[in-house]
Image 1 (cartoon, rainbow, N blue to C red):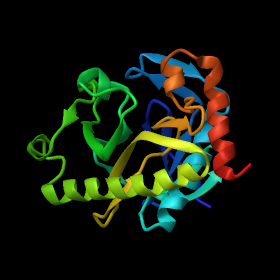
Image 2 (image 1 turned 180 degrees about the vertical axis):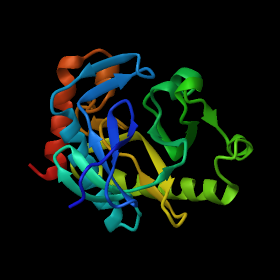
Image 3 (image 1 turned 60 degrees about the vertical axis):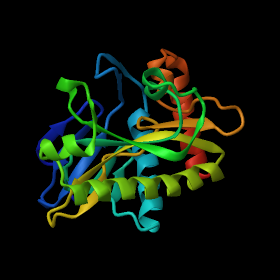
Length: 238
């Protein structure tokens, strides 16, 4: 089994370590919780482990449905052995229901189902506060070419279809989610980072109660880990 070596990246809630295999890394999911470009920060017990297990299972679901991911195996409750990627600095956001920043910025009614879903791409850069991108800006910045942009969009829609069906079966509405992609050592674009209540808006199918990070953003700290735990239990089939 690969062992952690030097720290190569320390993000807001995850740390990435090199291994003795140059094509593999270990991603450690920490218990940190942040919002607002890191301005709001707390530590939530067991949050890292819950997100690591949830991400592992969802990556397996996607792999089983033909989506290549960086996931290799869950080696500890809060650590995932992954393929090493050169991450593309784009946050790909898929929206199935209008809410959040979408309704704050545009004349769209909160809670409206979006048909077709909206794909939004943001520049992953805290200095510029993750501004929205379009194809022309992406190409001008040299982030990706048109073929690569089309791949990101196609994969995002396919991932959405798979995850919507999966969550629906466990009584959860996939409202929207953020994903990131990277390139492996052969230049293949594959899904990376995580898919968890940190990166998704999830509502209970019957009550419409939130089961995600939005609870933290709204200051409902006492409800956050209960919600994450509920998502975990449904995903593992408890």
